[in-house]
Amino acid sequence: MESRQAWPPHHVTIDMKESKKLHGFTFTARVANGVMKATGNPKNIIVEAGADGQTWAYREEFVLSNTELNTIYLAYPPQARFFGSPSIPARAIFT
Image (tube, rainbow, N blue to C red; front, side, top):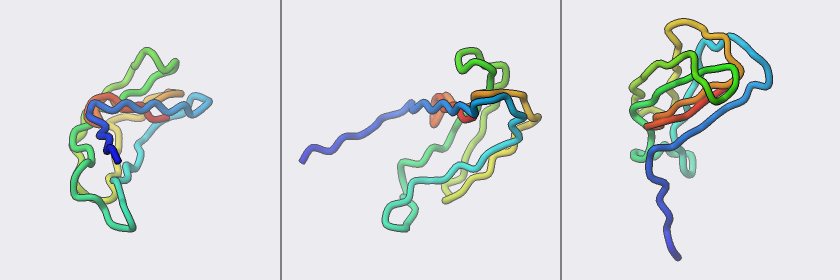
């Protein structure tokens, strides 16, 4: 059986379907059989937010701990429909 590895950068875009103030989010690490994986979790991420999913009016960088849950609070709450991060570790967008 061939194993496939997804190499960074990984990109995620989340559409909240309507514009909202984004204060933060919780990032959950990879878990297998109830145990957090020691490797493969993002360390450096960039969070972006915007109105159309193409142009990003807000951008902030974070360093995540290698823990099961990381709660991220943004420096200020941007009004946005889309959000994500170009760095998990490159570009992920969460809404």
